Image 1 (cartoon, one colour):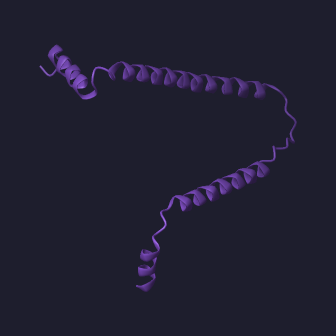
Image 2 (image 1 turned 30 degrees about the horizontal axis):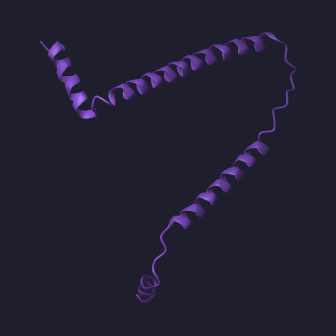
Image 3 (image 1 turned 90 degrees about the horizontal axis):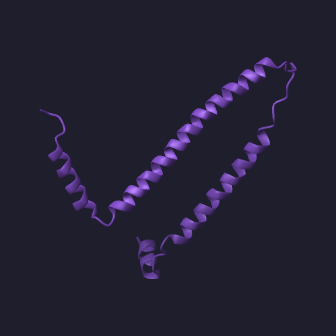
Length: 114
């Protein structure tokens, strides 16, 4: 009794057509299709990436590695990223200041008098 009946689907389709209009439905369906395609590709890459990492790990385990391995210097890269973030934040603050409306001289005088 609580199952989805064919007339439920017909009413749902009519509501969607009324809300979005017949002209927008093909574009919406196309964009949903593209999004699903991208999503499937990304999930496949993630699953494939996990398999590749597992294979690499097994390969590394079977090889004899020297006991003393030196890690790559991560500190210079991190400081460069921090500097870039700081520069971008400064630029953002400058843009916000430029976009802020400046009060008229009369309004500013009233604020100073208060």
